[in-house]
Image (cartoon, rainbow, N blue to C red):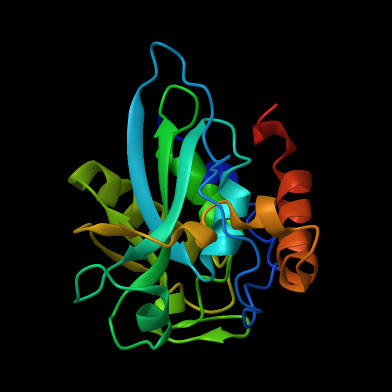
Length: 222
């Protein structure tokens, strides 16, 4: 199912006030438990997309709540070394971006709808920076897996630029997917495990999630 770009251009300003992640306070709770999955229908049509929009704690928390998303993992893509660690990626020297890899049921949600949320929940006009996070690891990027995905991303990006949805041009990198490295266990399901005891979750992620839930109420998981 394809959703025309024009269907959501008018609403693109709604979440413009969502600032991306600031400096991290460090890991709080380590757990291999992952609550990012959801029950699949027998006839599910699964597809995968990988993108980065700043801190992966923030993007993971949002997309875990989006109806049609089957699983969400935080990790690293777009770099030049194998099996990077969080410390190495944070140095900005590996070329990786903090990313969220999403498996979704295309019978329930389209790639265009997922990208609608993606563009509305971070600032795609700032180069290598989201809020207080600076460096190539926090760049806005979409890693497409095939030409059909690339076409959808290109159409949406071009449409948003032409519409004047943002004051500045979109600088989101659109590049072919190569490999995704899953981040360390303590990064997975981070917000759900730490929101009650971590100031970063309280002051940065909570406002983003609340606004997402308000403006995408019709797309939330039950």
